[in-house]
Each structure stands twice: as C-alpha cells, then as structure tokens.
Image (cartoon, rainbow, N blue to C red; front, side, top):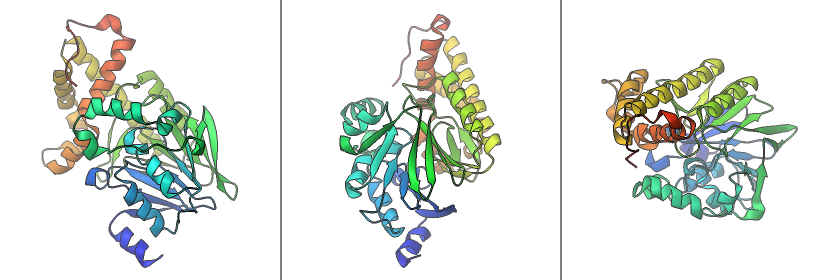
Length: 332
C-alpha cells in the first residue's frame, strides 16, 4: 500500500473490509461515518455509491489512493438516485471517462437530466440543500446502463454483482449481491445502521415509501442468503438475519406510531414530535448520556421529520378512510 493510501486510511477515509472491497467515507456535509461508497478492486474495478456531489473530490482522491486512475474504473453503480447515494455520479463519470454508470431503469433519466430531481429536493430541503447535497451534474446518457427487476455487473474473473430491484424506500432502488463474497449492498432498503451503538433507524422519506413493498424487499434480501450487509449508512454488518429482522421491526413501529398520530388528528409537525418522543428509547445514540452532537448529526441527515412525512404520505394513499379529525397535514 502506498504512502498516500496509508495517509488516507489514517484519516479514516479508506477502510479495507476484505474480499478486495474498500469502504470509502464520503465525508457527507463534512461529517464522518454517515455515507459510504465501496470500491470493489477486482479485475474490472467497480464503485458502489458515489455519495453527494460535494463528496466527489473525497471519493476521487480515495480511488486514486487505491490505485484506480482515470482510465481504470470500469463501473459506477448506485443503489438509487437519492442525492446522498448518486449525487456525485455526474462528477465521477467525468473524472473516470471509461466507467459505465449502472442504475435502475426508473432512475436512469434523472441521472441524465437531474433538473427535476434537484427541483424536488430544493422543495424538501430548502436552504439546507446546498450544504447537505450540493448540485448533481448530468451523466452523459450514452454512459448510463439501466437495469430492471434483475441485472448483472461484470467484475471480471467470473465475479459479478447481481442487481435485484428492491423498492419500498424508493421505486428506483436496487440491492446488489457480490457473487464472490456474498456481500449484499443494501442501500437504504434496510434503513440506517449506526456503528458503535448498533442502532437501526428506518429510512422512509417521501414520496415512494410503501410499507408492504419495503417489507417484501427485506424478505427478498433474506432469501439471497448474504454473508454480510454493507450499509450505505453505514458500514458492514455480519448478523444478517438479526439485522434484517430489526429493520422490519423498525418499519412496523414507526408506521404504527405515525398511524396513531394521524388518528389523533395531529398535523405533521406535531406528529413528528410525538413519533420522535415515542421511539427515542429504541436508540442508544439518543440516550440522555450520549453525545448530543452525534444525535444531532443523524437527525440532520436522516431525521424523524423525513421519516414521518414519508409514512404519512403512504398512509394517506393506503388508508384514506382513516383520516381522523384532521383538517389536513401541515409542515414541510
């Protein structure tokens, strides 16, 4: 390993997690341990997840440190087009001009022309958008390969990533399993994993969350019998069955608490406060004795407001007869 790699590893950006896979901390919004990309340093090197647009220089530097020059990267794959996972796709495609960019077919047009995606994100995040996510650059349409229900990425030497459509978090979400290692890249379909505490929080933002579909994707993941789960947020986890079961439990708990708030006639802001309070005991990161800066970091990146808003939107579609006494949903 070169001195540059050692320097980068010492800074906590690159972690060798085995099987020729290297975790890259994208340093989203300046934070560590929030969003990971993964380099599979196989015969045909592949990057899974790009991080945000402002993270692209960090990821590019890590790839360079790992010996991947501009002509070496064969493939960039994103599990879905949300800006913390694919925001850097256009920038990294420009930096690695030989790389094919693989995405689910429902997200492909948004990589080629991110204008609608950025406009939608601006409505949700307002002034926070630039600091959190930056602006996604277009990816040349001729460089994009769309996959459907299943697909495959050639990693060389008989090794491949097998893509499986896994909606519920987003309609354009895929999980990716490595044929050589059994590692399953879960994106956001299994929620957020907090290293150190082992906390798991759901990821249920609008507009695509669907409880039944999300639970079906988790069952599909279990059926693939992976050896590890590689979370985009954040890192590798070996207790596959336990973690997938917990992910399903979190979805059910948050949905039931949001349903309770909706039946009580609460607007969105009050529903968020109620659900956050009723679920906080589930997470060590929110314990009174825990570092409040860590809790604030996770709340800023993937907090209760986004989760409850996504569940509320799904409930309005799935259970319209159960409106309760509300006049309407307020808040963002």
